[in-house]
Length: 334
Image 1: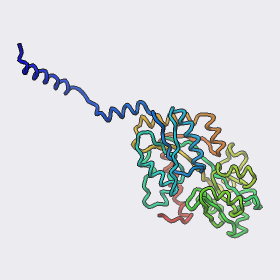
Image 2 (image 1 turned 180 degrees about the vertical axis):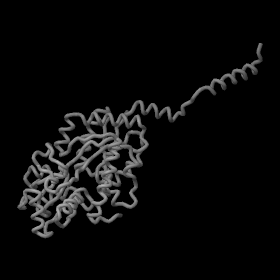
Image 3 (image 1 turned 135 degrees about the horizontal axis):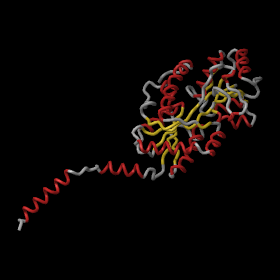
Image 4 (image 1 turned 180 degrees about the horizontal axis):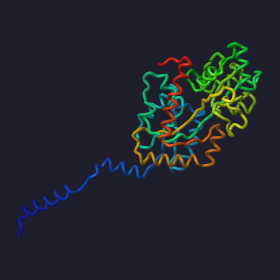
């Protein structure tokens, strides 16, 4: 009969040999794998680096609602406005990359802010995982209805005749409306006095006659145009679009002029690829829905999607384009 102690030693060695041949998965990784497999199992936050009620906020909410239905979990919009979108993007960069934070990115924070800040707290090309664009928004050139101006050519001629007496309203220095206006003045070879307002107040100022003209996102001016308080005379896409009826493109009068807004979906950089794939699939299904296209059209935007690689390249090209415009605007780098 074997000695009990000897048997125990032999059994122990056998166990060690068996254990040595096994591959263990660390507990945290096993948990992460389970989390990815069951994703999403709780509400998802969509960081919005813009104020509630803004045109970008409105479009983001339309997409968030339907995306939540497609993914089976609510997508909650979290507005973090400030510093032209910089505050929200910094929060987004530092968010937990677990798939439960998305970022609704747009022109101001991704392609304008980098030219305005020496020490931007994020890199628009390296600090985020790109999913896809989801909308493009034409800006619309509007004038006060009391002006003898019905076309882009009329505005240019009238502004030249008044020799700098016209005011151009904008949503603030460095805003999309400011830079779009500066580009038009430069290419159209006329001058207007820049009057910055806070956010959407510029459209109301033009309607009231405090300023004479402005270029703003289509969603923010549609109501006042329909009410007859603003006159829309052109848009900033390169050619006409069915969404805006027979409204001419500014480029028809000023060749080469183009300045549209856009929105896309990002995630924190280290978000696992399987989760990114699920999110992108969900976004593609969402943007293919007829009701989404109709809803965005009513907000003055068109659906536009692309691959993550195309989206990143698009942002890179936009960054290059806006550098000279910021210089033309005379904006100081902070």
